Length: 129
Image (tube, rainbow, N blue to C red; front, side, top):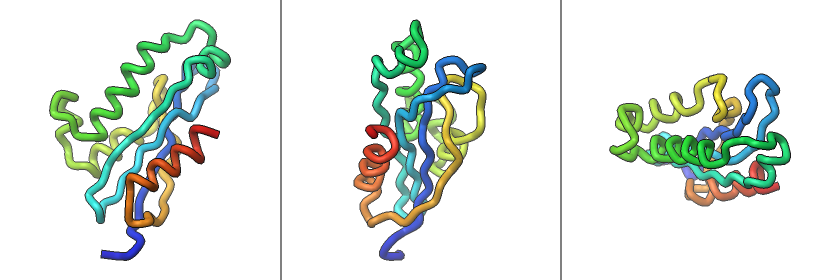
């Protein structure tokens, strides 16, 4: 196994009003085939959401993000998609869509060997700034 395996990640975005195309970066999904790793972390700041979309349904969006996270983790209670292999789940979660939950384009990188730490670092750089 390479010292720094290749990973792929996408930024998870909340688009409260799809027609306006305004979004908040709220999470990261990271996939590393060599390490058999797929995980997603998200943080949705309710005040930031209300700032770009007053009246946005915070609880509904949180439920949708939680469903994404369950699918990423392969939770058996999350439906058929969650039962697919990690690569297919990653592709499904990062597919282009016109809904309140979207992802950026997929980006490659080299993992430090600890994909959980890489996921945390990306969350800090892309979401918490």
